[in-house]
Structure formats: structure tokens, C-alpha cells
Length: 62
Image (cartoon, rainbow, N blue to C red; front, side, top):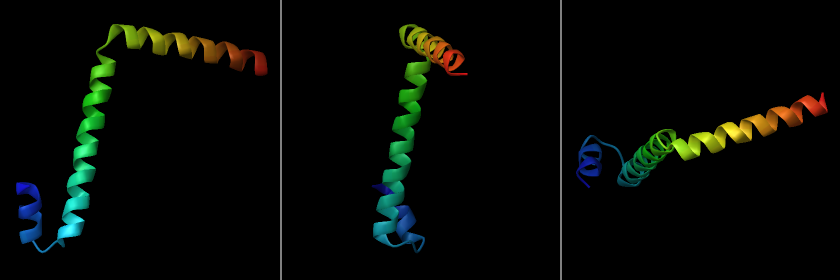
């Protein structure tokens, strides 16, 4: 809540400060999740497999 207090003291309305704090928190969570997935060899292999499948479908559709 310290970030909210700091922003609120800077003249930002409390509701706007809360929304901004929630937005920043969600961005941090998404970044952490993306980093974890990027570091997971099984997930990376699955992503490559999906891309290969999608490419084969695109080749058939063209």
C-alpha cells in the first residue's frame, strides 16, 4: 500500500492510484509467468511443436 500512499500524496485520486497499482501488479505477474515459461524446456518444446503444426497447416492452405 505504500505505492498507493505515495501516488495519492502526489495528487492522484485514490481510485486511480489503486487501478494503477493493480495494473502494475498484473504486469509484474505476467512478466514473471512469461519468464518462467521461457525458461521451461518442456514448454519451449511444446511451443516449437505448435509452430511446426501451424506452419504445416499454412502450407496446405496456400
